[in-house]
Every structure is written in structure tokens, then in C-alpha cells.
Amino acid sequence: MEAEKKDFLKRLMEHDFSRKIVLILAFAGIALIFLSSVFGKTGKETQQSVQTAASAVSSQESNQDYTAQMEQRLSELISQISGAGTPHVLVTLEQGTAQVYATEEKTTTQKAQDSSGSRNTDNSSLETKYILVKDANGNEHPVEITQQQPKIQGVVVTCPGADNPAVQEKIISAVTTAVGISSARVCVVRSDS
Image (cartoon, rainbow, N blue to C red; front, side):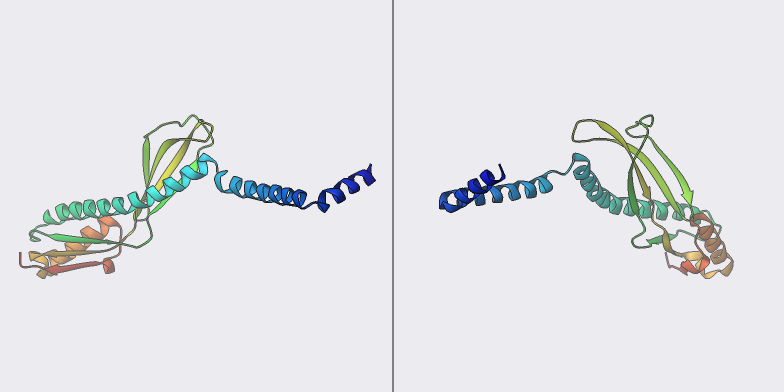
């Protein structure tokens, strides 16, 4: 039997046509292996890469919204301080601190499409949401999306009453307490309006 296999292979390799067929089949096999590794990704992997790209864009937008919200809230707070006048507030964020995490839940009891919760740590906050993701087989799995709000780097306040040291101290104290940063990261200066 072994001799028959050797004879068959020897006869097969003697003909040019047979060699070409064997080479074409070998290249076709290699191409199929390559294509299966490229196009064989599961729907979950593809969907996670799409979600990561989308969350990066939404993260930048949410940082701008977060900054505007903090500026508005601080302006309202400072305007309540006696002698401060009408303040203008600028909030700057630390770069690269907003992060989005996606983790698949192990239990199916938390299947909620838009439920959310939040908790505070340091001067940043975590926001958690759950979404349903369909895999390649059409099965739905809950995925927890956790977004950590960025840390505030510094706050600049301009107001007419800032030339009074007592008012300036009250403003610095209010801002540091409200956003949880040190007084070295708060600048209060007098404005003409």
C-alpha cells in the first residue's frame, strides 16, 4: 500500500498539468485560510470595535457638555456670594482622563436597555449604563458601559468683586468645595463687567 502511494505521487508529479493543479489547490487552501481569519471575526468583536469608536466620539462631546454644565453651575454658585457680582467661569479638564469601559455581564437578569446609575470617586464620577448587544447568532447579551467623567484641572473665575480679599477667599472656598480641587488650581481675578 505504501509503495502504491509513492508510485501515484511520482506519476502525478511527472506531468506538468498535474503539478499545476497541485500548486493551484495549495494556493487556494492558503487563500481560504487567510480569508477565514480576516472575515471570520465574530459579530461581537466587530460590534465592540464600532462601539469603542463611537464612544470615543461621544466621550469628546460629553466632555464639552460636562465642562459647560460645570461652568454654568459654578457661575450660579458664585453669583450668590455677596459682593462677587456677575462672574465668568472657565473650567479646564485634564487631558486623557475620560475613559469608556465595556464589559459583558455574566447574568441576564440585568437586561435593561437604558438603565443607569452613578457613583462618585475623587473629583471624577462614574456613570454606568447597560445596553443589549446582538452577537453573530442573533442572541442578545447585556453589556455594561461605564464612563468615567474627566477630572477638573483648574478653574478661572473673573468677577467685579474679586479685588476684595474677603470675597476672593469666599469664591476660592466655594469653588474648591464644589468641584473637589485644591485652592492652587483656582484663579480668581477682577473683571470690569
